[in-house]
Structures are given as structure tokens and as C-alpha cells.
Length: 263
Image (cartoon, rainbow, N blue to C red; front, side):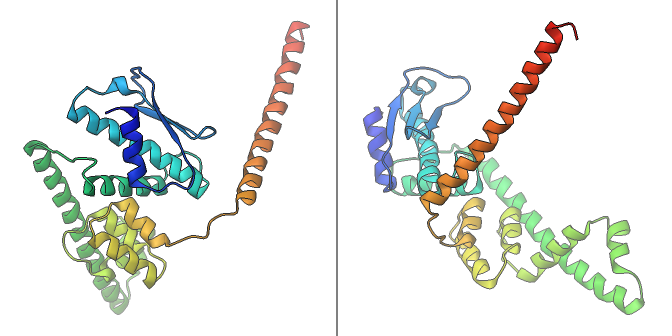
């Protein structure tokens, strides 16, 4: 896959508000497969990390989508290039689209499929046990009230759960989610702040979306941040960094002077 072909595929996936360049470094890099440079809006892929084959092209294009997700997060959400939940939601959406359009393949062999299914089943079993535990705790609360026993003491010292976990499990039990939902997705949905957010998350979960996508679905559409405001915040951050570095430099110079003078 040439760099022109990789860029053309990326453009089919997402209509970027700001353009980007994509280039191959022609090098092998043991640390990273690719990088995104904020200032120049440039994607660089270390193409020598990948074999010249269909499988290699597939892995290379995944790296390209990873870097495009950084570009989208930076140019459309005015965030730096951290691997945030938003970043993973963007990346997962790009991969979903690429798979649907036939631009990216998920070709797992039988061994990978078997272990993947087993991991998903275990996650769903944990979720089911969480719901069961939440129900048991709810019943325990009622019995403790009826018999004059301090419920919080029983939970903390005998069941050995923190108050925070106990509240989370009570919420999970109240959701009555269907079997098959993974435990982390279940916890995300249980953390919804209102019914509208919860319904959006449930819809994303029913569609088979990732945990990051489910969480982002609950966030809903956000107003585009004002560019001037974003730049002002960045200016403040840079100003504070410069001030701290200047202060530290002065301390170092002073210390060097003392050492040179034998003090």
C-alpha cells in the first residue's frame, strides 16, 4: 500500500474539517509504528515496521487510522494527542467504518476466535455475578433494617466491600441488563447521570459498540469550543510552564554560582 493509497482510504473514512498530510518515513522504529505532529498536522508512518503483504498492509492501515484519530481529536475537539476515552471512541468508530467499507479486515484465526469468545463470555459472567451480588446486597439491606443491624458495618467488615462499590452494585442490579453485556460496559451504563444518557448508552451497547463508544454515546453532542477560548487556555498553560522553568533555571544558576565560589 502506497502512502497515497493510505491517505485516500483515510479520506473515505472521515470528512476532516482540517486537512492533513501522510507520509512514510521509510524507516523501521522499534518504539512506535506511527506519529502525529500537532503543529504541522502531519501523519508519519514507519512503514518498514510492516511486511510487504496483505496482512502487513492491514496492520499499517490500522496505524494510519490510529494517527487519524489523533488528528480528529486535535482539530475537531481541540484536545492534545493523549489516548483519552474520546480518542478510543473516535478510533473504534473509524475501524468500524473501515471494516464496513472493506478497507480493513479482521481476520482472526480459530485460536484467536476461541480465546476472544472465552474472554467475552467471562466478562459477561462477571457482569451477571455483579447483578446477582447487587440483588443480594439489596435484600441484605432490608433484613438488616428489619432486625436492627447496622448494614454499613456488615458490608464493610463482613462482606468486605467499600461503600462506593456497594452503591455501584446496587445501581447495576437496578438496571436489569440482559445477559451477554460485558462487566465494564455494564459499569459505564450504571454510571449514567440521567435516563436520557442511560438510554443512549444502552443503544450503543445493543449495537455492539466498544466501552469507549458506549461512554461517548452518553456524552451526547457537545457545543464546538470557541477557538479563541481554546487558544487562551493553551497560552495560560504555556505561560505557567515558562514561569516554572524560568524559576527553576534561576535556582540552578544560583546553585552553580555557590558551588563555583566554594560556598
